[in-house]
Image (cartoon, rainbow, N blue to C red; front, side, top):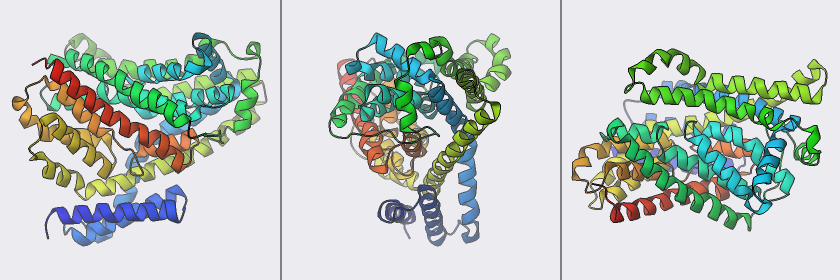
Length: 465
């Protein structure tokens, strides 16, 4: 049996089963994703002799646990942040400050700029946790445009995370290509020049296009109903917390995480920073940073509503219950993707495409894109492709930073069921599956293609080699 056949069979059956369970039978997302993960694992065991049949349930549980270890605490704390910022009026206060700088017609630019800046030092999922309450409050205050706000937050955050070091993805790829700190500055410059126009196309332009065609209502999410948001939007500004206090949970999370990112990135070049590693690794961990941010938001919530501690505790517990459901669905999506990855589909696709006689930038984008769609993880797609393309760097006639961008563009395309990010956006945003595909999945696809075209234009006009 050809080595590619088991992996391709696992992929095909996995796609059929997950669509059947989630779309046709409309099972709860968590149940459907776990069953799909078991199914792919069984196919792996039947077709691959080195996979033990009896280990499949444990492998699925381990993959679920590994994903939960990465997102469990952040999502639960994000639930507290969302509930507290919304109910205290903090999100409403920040939104009104944005509106004082831009008109209602251009409110999307405020959200786009904020998500872009936040995503440079912070992982995208954490950015979405922090920006979702603002997007929902903006929708409640203005009365429409929610599809647009989801698109700009997703487009800005994803573009910055995929293209601008020191975010881990492009930094890891640059290091694999031998394009580490020696040309890190150029990679950052090219990353900014790629991320900004690509996000304007995929986030703002497409967001405004789809917003004219899809009206997404506010639904209950993270323990907050649409009615709660609309009531907050009508409150006089004098009854809301101050701007700095309102923004403080986001500032705390970003500054803590950014400190860890900064020291990790530059401690090799500046030994004096190494003494800070233990401290910044601790406070810069998303689990700790979002916990502190959640407590800051919760204290403001208690202060502004001035109700008994027991009621405050009950409200936070309700938020945690909602967050637990979101975390479970997200981790199950990651487990489904992990079972697909275990089939070896990523390397099968990468090996099949690496010998194509097309330009290196397009080849790199194509490999990363198909690996991403097949197994769900953008990071895995980028690192896999970086390893394959590294020996070909001497053949480049353009600066290696362009290759980093092409790989990043391919690695972020077409987020769907096997990507935990899909479920984060759907559940925290309060979207249906269809709405998530029309906004988030479409944005990632357009962003990927737009970034590739931009990179090809830049590398042709200004090769920098």
